[in-house]
Length: 293
Image (cartoon, rainbow, N blue to C red; front, side, top):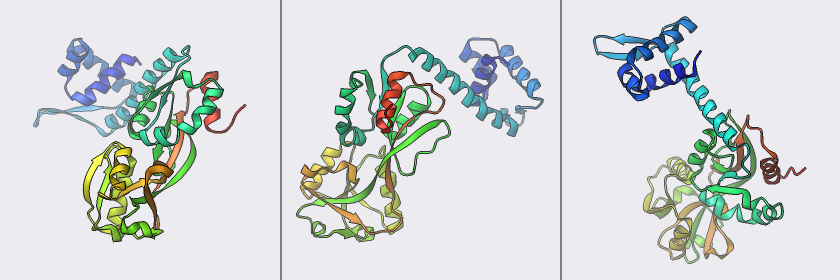
Protein backbone atom coordinates (compact mmCIF):
# COMPACT_ATOMS: atom_id res chain seq x y z
CA UNK A 1 0.00 0.00 0.00
CA UNK A 2 1.33 3.41 -0.97
CA UNK A 3 0.99 6.45 1.28
CA UNK A 4 0.22 8.52 -1.83
CA UNK A 5 -2.80 6.29 -2.52
CA UNK A 6 -4.12 7.13 0.93
CA UNK A 7 -3.60 10.83 0.28
CA UNK A 8 -5.51 10.57 -2.99
CA UNK A 9 -8.29 8.69 -1.21
CA UNK A 10 -8.49 11.27 1.58
CA UNK A 11 -8.80 14.10 -0.93
CA UNK A 12 -11.41 12.21 -2.96
CA UNK A 13 -13.55 11.91 0.17
CA UNK A 14 -13.48 15.70 0.38
CA UNK A 15 -13.94 16.58 -3.29
CA UNK A 16 -16.00 13.58 -4.52
CA UNK A 17 -14.58 14.29 -7.96
CA UNK A 18 -11.66 12.48 -9.64
CA UNK A 19 -10.77 15.44 -11.88
CA UNK A 20 -10.53 17.85 -8.93
CA UNK A 21 -8.31 15.45 -6.99
CA UNK A 22 -6.04 14.99 -10.00
CA UNK A 23 -5.79 18.76 -10.40
CA UNK A 24 -5.09 19.17 -6.67
CA UNK A 25 -2.08 16.83 -6.85
CA UNK A 26 -1.00 17.79 -10.37
CA UNK A 27 -1.38 14.27 -11.78
CA UNK A 28 -3.56 12.65 -14.43
CA UNK A 29 -7.06 11.44 -13.64
CA UNK A 30 -6.17 7.80 -14.46
CA UNK A 31 -3.51 8.01 -11.71
CA UNK A 32 -6.23 8.71 -9.15
CA UNK A 33 -8.53 6.06 -10.60
CA UNK A 34 -5.84 3.37 -10.45
CA UNK A 35 -4.91 4.33 -6.88
CA UNK A 36 -8.51 3.87 -5.73
CA UNK A 37 -8.78 0.60 -7.62
CA UNK A 38 -5.61 -0.68 -5.90
CA UNK A 39 -7.08 0.11 -2.50
CA UNK A 40 -10.38 -1.56 -3.34
CA UNK A 41 -8.55 -4.64 -4.57
CA UNK A 42 -6.38 -4.75 -1.44
CA UNK A 43 -9.45 -4.70 0.80
CA UNK A 44 -11.76 -6.68 -1.44
CA UNK A 45 -14.58 -4.15 -1.36
CA UNK A 46 -16.02 -1.13 -3.15
CA UNK A 47 -15.40 2.28 -1.60
CA UNK A 48 -17.17 4.47 -4.19
CA UNK A 49 -20.12 4.10 -6.56
CA UNK A 50 -21.19 6.46 -9.32
CA UNK A 51 -24.74 7.79 -9.09
CA UNK A 52 -25.51 8.35 -12.76
CA UNK A 53 -28.96 9.80 -12.03
CA UNK A 54 -27.62 12.62 -9.88
CA UNK A 55 -24.22 12.62 -11.59
CA UNK A 56 -22.28 12.36 -8.38
CA UNK A 57 -19.80 10.08 -6.66
CA UNK A 58 -21.16 8.39 -3.54
CA UNK A 59 -19.10 6.81 -0.81
CA UNK A 60 -20.18 3.38 0.45
CA UNK A 61 -20.49 2.40 4.11
CA UNK A 62 -17.17 0.56 3.97
CA UNK A 63 -15.69 3.51 2.13
CA UNK A 64 -16.65 5.85 4.95
CA UNK A 65 -15.29 3.45 7.56
CA UNK A 66 -12.00 3.26 5.68
CA UNK A 67 -11.97 7.05 5.34
CA UNK A 68 -12.08 7.42 9.13
CA UNK A 69 -8.98 5.24 9.47
CA UNK A 70 -7.18 6.98 6.60
CA UNK A 71 -7.68 10.37 8.25
CA UNK A 72 -6.11 9.06 11.47
CA UNK A 73 -3.22 7.39 9.62
CA UNK A 74 -2.34 10.51 7.63
CA UNK A 75 -2.58 12.69 10.73
CA UNK A 76 -0.27 10.34 12.66
CA UNK A 77 2.26 10.44 9.82
CA UNK A 78 2.17 14.25 9.82
CA UNK A 79 2.57 14.32 13.61
CA UNK A 80 5.47 11.85 13.39
CA UNK A 81 7.25 14.12 10.90
CA UNK A 82 6.73 17.15 13.17
CA UNK A 83 8.03 15.21 16.18
CA UNK A 84 11.10 14.10 14.25
CA UNK A 85 11.72 17.68 13.12
CA UNK A 86 11.49 18.82 16.76
CA UNK A 87 13.52 15.94 18.21
CA UNK A 88 16.77 17.92 18.46
CA UNK A 89 15.15 21.20 19.44
CA UNK A 90 15.57 22.45 23.00
CA UNK A 91 12.36 24.47 22.69
CA UNK A 92 9.10 23.24 24.20
CA UNK A 93 5.98 24.27 22.27
CA UNK A 94 3.55 24.93 25.10
CA UNK A 95 -0.16 25.83 24.95
CA UNK A 96 -1.77 28.24 27.42
CA UNK A 97 -5.45 29.26 27.33
CA UNK A 98 -6.07 32.88 28.41
CA UNK A 99 -7.64 32.30 31.84
CA UNK A 100 -5.22 29.52 32.79
CA UNK A 101 -2.29 31.56 31.47
CA UNK A 102 -3.30 34.63 33.46
CA UNK A 103 -4.38 33.09 36.75
CA UNK A 104 -2.99 29.57 37.17
CA UNK A 105 0.34 29.60 35.36
CA UNK A 106 2.10 32.66 36.92
CA UNK A 107 2.58 31.04 40.38
CA UNK A 108 4.30 28.11 38.63
CA UNK A 109 6.91 30.26 36.93
CA UNK A 110 9.33 30.59 39.90
CA UNK A 111 9.69 26.80 40.04
CA UNK A 112 10.15 26.63 36.28
CA UNK A 113 12.78 29.36 36.52
CA UNK A 114 14.68 27.44 39.20
CA UNK A 115 14.87 24.48 36.83
CA UNK A 116 15.78 26.85 33.94
CA UNK A 117 12.76 25.72 31.92
CA UNK A 118 11.16 29.11 31.29
CA UNK A 119 13.62 30.11 28.51
CA UNK A 120 12.79 26.86 26.72
CA UNK A 121 9.03 27.54 26.53
CA UNK A 122 7.51 28.76 23.27
CA UNK A 123 3.96 29.55 24.33
CA UNK A 124 0.87 29.65 22.14
CA UNK A 125 -2.18 31.38 23.58
CA UNK A 126 -5.56 30.21 22.29
CA UNK A 127 -8.77 28.79 23.69
CA UNK A 128 -8.59 25.23 25.02
CA UNK A 129 -10.47 23.82 22.02
CA UNK A 130 -7.96 25.26 19.56
CA UNK A 131 -4.99 24.17 21.68
CA UNK A 132 -6.39 20.64 21.83
CA UNK A 133 -6.49 20.52 18.02
CA UNK A 134 -2.95 21.88 17.82
CA UNK A 135 -1.75 19.25 20.28
CA UNK A 136 -3.38 16.39 18.36
CA UNK A 137 -1.94 17.67 15.07
CA UNK A 138 1.59 17.83 16.46
CA UNK A 139 1.85 21.63 16.55
CA UNK A 140 2.35 21.64 20.32
CA UNK A 141 4.36 19.41 22.64
CA UNK A 142 2.29 20.03 25.75
CA UNK A 143 -0.61 22.21 26.89
CA UNK A 144 -2.59 23.27 29.89
CA UNK A 145 -6.24 22.77 28.99
CA UNK A 146 -9.61 23.60 30.48
CA UNK A 147 -12.64 21.34 30.08
CA UNK A 148 -16.07 20.77 31.60
CA UNK A 149 -15.40 17.06 32.08
CA UNK A 150 -12.27 15.07 32.93
CA UNK A 151 -10.11 15.20 29.83
CA UNK A 152 -10.33 11.82 28.10
CA UNK A 153 -9.01 11.64 24.56
CA UNK A 154 -7.76 8.38 23.08
CA UNK A 155 -4.61 9.94 21.63
CA UNK A 156 -3.70 12.02 24.68
CA UNK A 157 -2.03 11.45 28.00
CA UNK A 158 -3.72 13.86 30.43
CA UNK A 159 -3.19 14.60 34.10
CA UNK A 160 -5.79 16.65 35.99
CA UNK A 161 -4.18 19.38 38.06
CA UNK A 162 -7.16 21.09 39.68
CA UNK A 163 -10.91 21.68 39.63
CA UNK A 164 -12.64 25.01 40.10
CA UNK A 165 -16.35 25.78 40.62
CA UNK A 166 -18.26 28.31 38.54
CA UNK A 167 -19.72 31.23 40.47
CA UNK A 168 -21.85 34.31 40.00
CA UNK A 169 -19.70 37.45 40.22
CA UNK A 170 -21.32 40.76 41.19
CA UNK A 171 -20.30 44.27 42.25
CA UNK A 172 -19.79 44.88 45.94
CA UNK A 173 -22.82 47.20 45.96
CA UNK A 174 -25.08 44.81 44.04
CA UNK A 175 -28.01 43.40 46.09
CA UNK A 176 -26.68 39.87 45.52
CA UNK A 177 -23.40 40.81 47.21
CA UNK A 178 -25.13 40.32 50.55
CA UNK A 179 -25.82 36.70 49.67
CA UNK A 180 -23.52 33.73 50.19
CA UNK A 181 -25.40 31.54 47.71
CA UNK A 182 -27.98 31.99 44.96
CA UNK A 183 -30.32 29.86 42.87
CA UNK A 184 -29.44 30.33 39.21
CA UNK A 185 -33.11 30.63 38.17
CA UNK A 186 -33.38 33.79 40.28
CA UNK A 187 -30.96 35.54 37.88
CA UNK A 188 -33.32 35.58 34.89
CA UNK A 189 -33.85 39.35 35.06
CA UNK A 190 -30.16 40.22 35.48
CA UNK A 191 -27.93 41.61 32.72
CA UNK A 192 -24.88 39.45 32.04
CA UNK A 193 -21.40 40.38 30.88
CA UNK A 194 -19.82 37.13 29.71
CA UNK A 195 -16.74 35.66 27.97
CA UNK A 196 -16.71 35.07 24.23
CA UNK A 197 -18.05 31.85 22.80
CA UNK A 198 -14.52 30.40 22.42
CA UNK A 199 -14.38 29.94 26.18
CA UNK A 200 -15.72 26.83 27.92
CA UNK A 201 -17.53 29.31 30.15
CA UNK A 202 -20.02 29.87 27.34
CA UNK A 203 -20.93 26.18 27.22
CA UNK A 204 -21.29 26.00 31.00
CA UNK A 205 -23.34 29.21 31.06
CA UNK A 206 -25.74 27.90 28.41
CA UNK A 207 -26.10 24.69 30.36
CA UNK A 208 -27.04 26.56 33.54
CA UNK A 209 -29.52 28.80 31.69
CA UNK A 210 -31.23 25.82 30.05
CA UNK A 211 -31.61 24.07 33.39
CA UNK A 212 -32.98 27.26 34.95
CA UNK A 213 -35.42 27.67 32.01
CA UNK A 214 -34.56 31.22 30.97
CA UNK A 215 -32.88 33.02 28.10
CA UNK A 216 -30.16 35.29 29.51
CA UNK A 217 -30.01 39.01 28.83
CA UNK A 218 -26.47 39.46 27.45
CA UNK A 219 -25.25 43.03 27.77
CA UNK A 220 -21.72 42.43 26.48
CA UNK A 221 -19.31 39.69 25.38
CA UNK A 222 -15.53 39.93 25.34
CA UNK A 223 -12.45 37.72 25.39
CA UNK A 224 -10.85 39.99 27.99
CA UNK A 225 -11.64 38.70 31.49
CA UNK A 226 -10.14 41.85 33.03
CA UNK A 227 -12.67 43.97 31.12
CA UNK A 228 -15.51 41.74 32.31
CA UNK A 229 -14.51 42.10 35.95
CA UNK A 230 -13.98 45.85 35.59
CA UNK A 231 -17.48 46.27 34.14
CA UNK A 232 -18.98 44.07 36.86
CA UNK A 233 -17.18 46.07 39.58
CA UNK A 234 -18.91 49.19 38.20
CA UNK A 235 -22.25 47.38 38.60
CA UNK A 236 -22.98 47.41 34.86
CA UNK A 237 -24.01 43.78 35.01
CA UNK A 238 -23.10 40.44 36.57
CA UNK A 239 -21.04 37.58 35.21
CA UNK A 240 -20.55 33.83 35.42
CA UNK A 241 -16.91 32.79 35.86
CA UNK A 242 -14.81 30.03 37.28
CA UNK A 243 -13.37 30.92 40.67
CA UNK A 244 -9.90 30.56 39.12
CA UNK A 245 -10.43 33.84 37.24
CA UNK A 246 -11.24 35.93 40.35
CA UNK A 247 -8.49 37.45 42.45
CA UNK A 248 -8.58 39.16 45.83
CA UNK A 249 -8.04 42.67 44.47
CA UNK A 250 -10.75 42.53 41.80
CA UNK A 251 -13.27 44.56 43.84
CA UNK A 252 -16.10 42.11 43.16
CA UNK A 253 -18.06 39.60 45.22
CA UNK A 254 -18.20 35.86 44.48
CA UNK A 255 -21.55 34.20 45.13
CA UNK A 256 -21.80 30.41 45.14
CA UNK A 257 -24.55 28.69 43.15
CA UNK A 258 -27.02 26.38 44.92
CA UNK A 259 -28.13 24.35 41.93
CA UNK A 260 -27.31 20.61 41.91
CA UNK A 261 -25.16 18.99 39.20
CA UNK A 262 -23.33 22.17 38.29
CA UNK A 263 -20.60 22.18 35.64
CA UNK A 264 -17.05 22.22 36.96
CA UNK A 265 -13.94 23.72 35.36
CA UNK A 266 -11.32 20.96 35.04
CA UNK A 267 -7.72 22.02 34.51
CA UNK A 268 -5.33 19.45 33.04
CA UNK A 269 -1.91 19.19 31.47
CA UNK A 270 -1.84 17.06 28.33
CA UNK A 271 0.57 15.61 25.77
CA UNK A 272 0.26 13.07 22.98
CA UNK A 273 0.06 9.52 24.30
CA UNK A 274 2.66 8.03 21.99
CA UNK A 275 5.27 10.82 22.07
CA UNK A 276 8.65 9.95 23.56
CA UNK A 277 9.64 12.99 25.61
CA UNK A 278 13.27 14.11 25.57
CA UNK A 279 14.78 14.96 29.00
CA UNK A 280 13.78 18.65 29.18
CA UNK A 281 10.19 18.01 28.14
CA UNK A 282 9.98 15.10 30.58
CA UNK A 283 11.29 17.39 33.32
CA UNK A 284 8.55 19.92 32.58
CA UNK A 285 5.88 17.20 32.62
CA UNK A 286 7.16 15.89 35.95
CA UNK A 287 7.21 19.35 37.50
CA UNK A 288 3.69 20.16 36.36
CA UNK A 289 2.32 16.82 37.58
CA UNK A 290 4.35 17.00 40.81
CA UNK A 291 6.33 13.86 39.92
CA UNK A 292 9.94 15.07 40.04
CA UNK A 293 12.74 12.54 39.60
